[in-house]
Length: 260
Figure 1 (tube, rainbow, N blue to C red):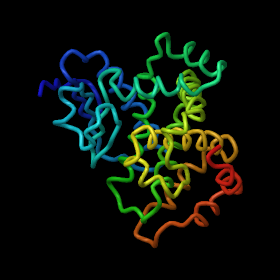
Figure 2: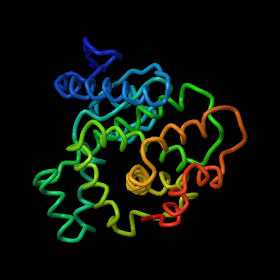
Figure 3: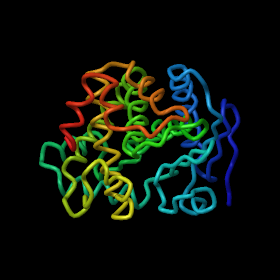
């Protein structure tokens, strides 16, 4: 393993040799986003970031598929380059999307389409998982937890990175057109088994939940994000859909529109 430690960040940042510039860019994003998230949730978890290439991935990642962003304990791992998962998703986007969406993908992500920047937004999503990994959390359906993380990601982009929000929305819009063969599971309560179907099926859930988080941020405002977190935090009974719907009048109608 040829990881290089980068100095100058408020959290430990390691990167595969040869990707130091990318590591610095993602380290800066993680530093700023973590501060924003911590301010809104009232505490700051321990955090370390690894930006690994395909050669180093197996030594640091629990999920072996290269390029799947992930967080375990205090450790967030993201890909160093545009790997097979990103390329597979780009091909699926282009295959299923109507002409206007394909044109938007090319304007935002180039020709050929490279979704590396789209995946980078998920670093923010993964940082929210730190707040779940390092405290007691009530049992909850997977989609409830992932939607929390997407609320944090969308909120940060709304307030701090409008250009990033635009690129996130372009990719998220394309996810609505993934061909049916990639989306075996569709119901919210099927998300837990979607990764067994395919990584793109699981990714479809994350992206459609991103669209849902975007709608909820607009409809319910920034107070929904910390309220959603406090609902999950603690040692109480399992979180129910009724608990989630009670958080804000906009939540029930939004869930009724799934999968958007």
